[in-house]
Length: 148
Ligand SMILES: [Zn+2]
Ligand SMILES: [Zn+2]
Image (cartoon, rainbow, N blue to C red):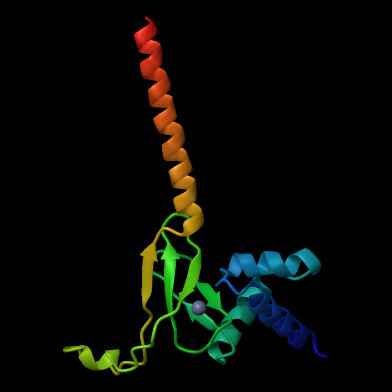
């Protein structure tokens, strides 16, 4: 196999293995753990080539690094506002949503990305734990006040 082909399949495998919409940096970390000689530039270039050829999907989210999706069929996503992780959403695809666009300034619409936002279960749990700790602190402080 040619060197380029090997790097390309390593990149594709990493995206498929990570599943959860990794960023280019996360894909690079995954590959370089086993192949320390691969450069970040190579991984980035291969990710973009794979996205261009439709083998993976590149998700461009405003003010976030690009995420790469092993899953190429049309589906929607939700992104955690705390940790930035992206998850697939189980929901029917609205295939003719483009048709509801009233004025597209003459654009030929090629598709759309729909990303919901929220707080993931891990982060909600962490927030709850912190709220509990804060609540205990304030109780402790009150008790201290009483003693004085
Ligand atoms: Zn989160
Ligand atoms: Zn996805």
